[in-house]
Length: 449
Image 1 (cartoon, rainbow, N blue to C red):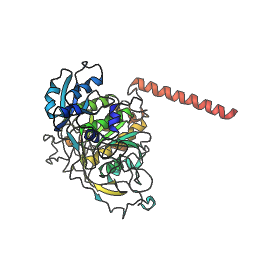
Image 2: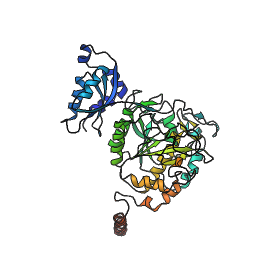
Image 3: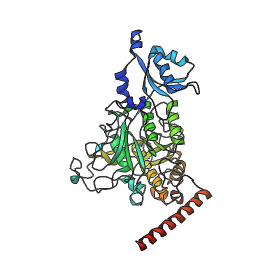
């Protein structure tokens, strides 16, 4: 495998790389100060023979490249403010855009749960008996046969506590400056809570997730304070693409859109990944109208499944953002899940609602027997067309995600890259025929052996 600069820099964290490398000596010698801006640099299509030429362009204005990607041709650089105009005017550069911030609400504050008595601690045997959250029961995920087994789910968040008694973490990567690339531990709590909703283990302890058999990957794109940049989020998507992680779950949001982020989403979508995102916690006027358009980005992107939140009484949560891009509704208020320090906590938000849909997507993905990323649109269509109408307004999109109905839909088991239609039906019949032939020869072998 080629060792790219992205991997080298990522090994010490994107933010740390920028801080350690700083401005090149040539820039310092020329008297350029340390006032720099972190930007995406997009090359002109067909104007560069190779990526190295774009890096040379950045270096020529005194900049330092801090992130490259395996699947995208733009780069992230720290550029002196005095060199930005020169960079923009270079004929080999299409656009230069700011690397804006993303994250979770600063007032996100889970409360340690006393529902189970006194949970927590490193002794897993002492943890309380398992029970599903009201959300798992409301969407019917507690009594379905599928568990999401074999499906890879990337939790792009603050990391996941890898030794939590209710979680199994398959791996991950850290793209923030808080630790090394291999340090994807959650020291905030948000990512661990989200992971528990999506796929906490079915192990008779604490909580259980919607898809307890799914492979959870801790893709740390938000720092220990819950904030991050689009470049780190894109690096997480890039990593999921390179590692064939089928489902990409983002319980976060930013105020502004980004051409680089758009590109990453569109490339991931076209390569068969399913992307989901929280609609935001910017509130609504209570009328069910979407005219206010309070959603955060990237939930507004058409290739992303955007999720709003409801409470235990089937009402739209007052904090939930709304907008014309809403796709689905999910439980989001007072949901008990795992959190750091081997504890359990109640929390609310569209970031809590999102992993409910992520989990159901994993359940459907498993039944379709896709091998790695495949056509994600059939899964998205199933989720939408089997959703339950609860609010009867645009604030719920297609409705409340419904695990029972989604798995009961005959399309959920059609699977395969062929999709719907007569070709898919023919393939299904052919596979059954092959199974019969294989079964016959296995039976015959047992008779003569």
